[in-house]
Image (tube, rainbow, N blue to C red; front, side, top):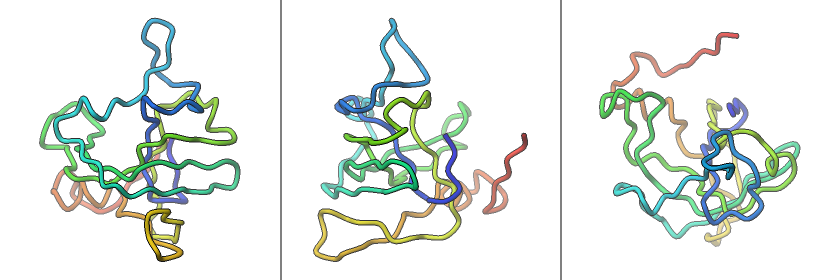
Length: 145
């Protein structure tokens, strides 16, 4: 699912009991991201929660290689921060998607549960990571309907 109001990318972890649906099913069971099976997956120990107009997501901030295509390293954004969701609320509980791809252009403050500070900023959007790696020629995206 694409979100232009936030820069957060998040995926349901295989430990998320409130994530009841997914776009891909294997043997009739919704598929969830199994981060620990990725050699480049790294936990940060930082937890966060993002509140949307309807619903919320919370989990650990992690890093991994993220790609939107199957072209291998050329289109890969290494070290991308995202939320490894262990709890979703509201309409996210029954969504038919594998997560949310935040494409919001401006950082906004969100609560960081592992910090003494009241707020932290969204990470750079995936588009910025791809641009810095020169996988895309401009730091922008478009959606064609």
